[in-house]
Length: 276
Image (cartoon, rainbow, N blue to C red):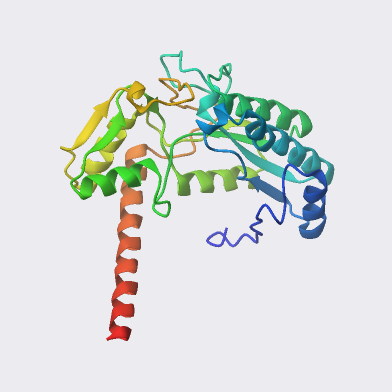
């Protein structure tokens, strides 16, 4: 938003709890936004199998409360869903009109959210996306894979689960574009390209010039997931291709990652020189 000169307020749960109608009303009355982007939610897919009530409260009930309030105030809403609303039975990338059939609690909570949000606010934008990666988050798959392989340590990745990875800056810009245009309904936003997690690690390492000989492509069963996962959740769009190719995104990710690493080195050197 700063880069695009868009005025914004970043709210914590203390500022606005989407599961509390009164809290939502107070925030909308106080800030009077023209649009709201909801990034709150329960994201621990395996824990959700044992914590379904909280998962549904934060992923389905909360967004519905927010959607109803935004509709009353005439405010555009963007909220996020997931590729895990699908069961992976198709042999092609999923598009927006494909029927949902989630395999786990988390996926069911997102599918329920889609229905509730669009019922309460037909003008809302619901973005299905997948497999985030970006240079600021130290815990996303691509960053972890590169850091581990750079240290010369083994890195395990599933060879039998395919996704459409999404570069966060591309996703954010596309969402802002759609919100500014007042778009509504379900959109699939992911970088163009579907591949397994092992292939993603291999491709990222190749682009970064990192030795991938210690990459171990393993069966997904070896992870012992509590929540069942679909084997294939590639995303495509029948409404419009708004994000560039995955290869292009990986290149920009690596450029920005190198810039951030250099800035950190400069900060460390400056701190060391002051101590000397």
